Every structure is written in C-alpha cells, then in structure tokens.
Length: 420
Image (cartoon, rainbow, N blue to C red; front, side, top):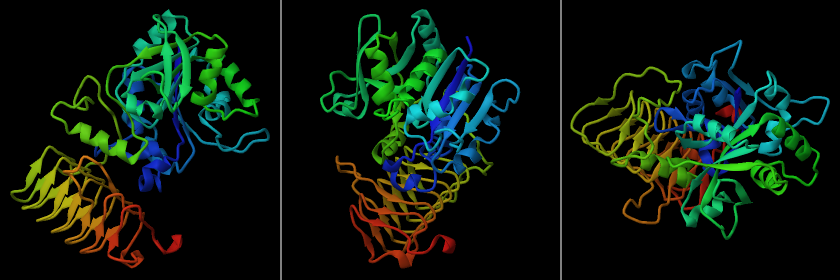
C-alpha cells in the first residue's frame, strides 16, 4: 500500500514566547543542531516513507530555508515522492488561512490525493520522538482500520493537556475527549494519525460543510468518527515523546537529554535524526574550564575559568572566562561575557549577555521558572532578568526602563521595524 505523510507545520506556537516571534514552532532549534520538525521528517524516512507534504502557514521562512530541496533527508525526489511545502492561498472558492488542523488538510486535499495514495499519515511537526511508523501501518492494515491513532501513557497530573481515550481489549477506541478537566484515563493522543485516504476525504468534506465545527482533528474529526462507529484503533507507543509546545516542556526536553541514560536515543546510529547543518570548526576549550553533564556543539568557544553545567550550547556559542551557565539552553552564536550568570534560562540566537549581568536563577528550587531572551537582544552589563522575566527580540540597552526585568515583565524594542 502507498502511504503519503502530511506534516502539520503551520502553528504559531504562542506559548513558546519569544522563540516563535520570528519563526514557526516546528522551525524552533532543538538540542543544539536540530529543528523540531527534523524528528517527524526523520521518522518518515527511517520508516521508509519518502512521500512527504508539509503544510506551513505562520512565519514559514525559516522552515522553508531549512527544508530546502529535502536533500539532508533524501527527499529531493522530483518524479515520485520527495518533499513538498504547501502554504495557504487565495482561490475563487472558499480557501483562506487555516481554521484548524483538519481544515489545513482539507484545503490541500486536492494535492494530497494526487497519485491516489492508499493511506495518509498525518503528523504534528512540533513533537520530539523517534518512532518507526511501519509497524503501525501493518497494525492498521491487519485490523482493517479506518483510522489508527498513535497513543502514549502520560502522568495523570498532565493528562488534561491532551486528548484522552479509552479502548477495548482489541485496541479499538471506545471513547475520546479533548483536554478533559477530569481525565478518564492516562492514554493520550500523540497527534499521529493513519487514515484510509477515501475515508479521510469524505470526513474532511463533511466537516468543511459543518458551520458549527472548529475543524480540528482532536475536537471534531475523531469524536465524530467514533460516534459513527467507524473502525478507530489505538496503536500504543512506549518510547520517549514530548510535546514541546510550552517553554517548560521545551526546557525539560533538553534537560532530559542530559540524563545519564537519556530516553531519547540521539546517538543510535540505527535511527539517525537528519538535519541541515552548516560546517563549523570543533569546540575550542582555551584553558581549564568546568563543564558538567552538558552538550556542546561545534563552533563553540569555552574560555578558561568558565563554568557550564547541565546545559545545551548550540553552534558558535561563546562562554567567556568567569561566566557561569547552569540548566540553560543557549542558541546559536550567543555570547555570555565574563562574570555573567545564566541559570534556568532559554536564550535565542545572537544574544549578548554582557559582563556581570544575570539571567535567571533558582537551580536549587523545585519550582522551575524559566527566564527568556529573544533573538538578537542585548542584556547590558550588570542588568538582571528575573525568573519568568522575558526580553523580546532585537532589544538594546535603551529599551530597558530600569536595570531589572522582573518576573512576568516583557521588554520589547521601541524601534520601528525598518530601524532594526
């Protein structure tokens, strides 16, 4: 059977704060060298699926540049398969910005059904996991399913964040509720859907004509299929999976990588996570520095006397003598100057934290609160960004009303876009 993958990559990702101010959520950097969408793409090619469509919408420029022709994933195929990026367009009929996940697929279904794939694998482009879809496809065919959903057990105190389902002894889904206040189980929807193409075409068109629908897979499509007694099955997944849709989960996923035996197998050569990378020289340690339980990417420079602990440093990051970085994610080409302290923070690309400045604190506290600094911003010498303080993109010294950015405060540039 022919399978076509459709990756939903249009989300704004507002809960990721300044990380998505200039890029869509699936294009947010992860683990130093990757983008979040690399995981869904790599899962496809590692599963033998080389026919992929990506549905983009919000600020797609970084995503389009990253995907390019698809060569890093062996998806630069023009005749059969390959990768295609589709964006919203105006037409004579009712096309417009996507109203929901199901609407995004429905608006592009003319392209999705070209070549008559038997199965359509709908994926979210903003989840971190390594999953072989081939056994799921076999499970779907063996059960003569209309829809097979990837599902995973989550902690009960987190279950209200997800779509929660129940199933019988044969894994047939008997009930589904989206983000319930009182979860009836801990079996959560992963956002991995395998549909028979003809059924998907039919149910999406019916949903499109329903004015009362929010046009969402979790809120509308799945409950309607279950109510109509369609053959909806659950495929359990037991590996690492994280929805990195919040600052807290994004930070936690990085810390998970630094565990002594991380659940996410980035170093398994049998399941490579592919990405587009630029050549950088090796890491340079200019003298004796203290580095513990961290990931340091090529092009980084760690000066003598610096301290880096439980952190992820992306390519080109410079940590100068006497600077301290703890439990933080520092993105590409940022500089932490002498005497500066960065703790429990997420710092975007090309940020400069100047001498004796402080961004975040609280590594000994059980209550995790993250400080954030947006792309191209400067934290002036001696300034302080408290936990849960946020500095936006392109912020310079004259934009700060005082020397402290307090918890819950958001500092943004006062300059016009053409001045940046």
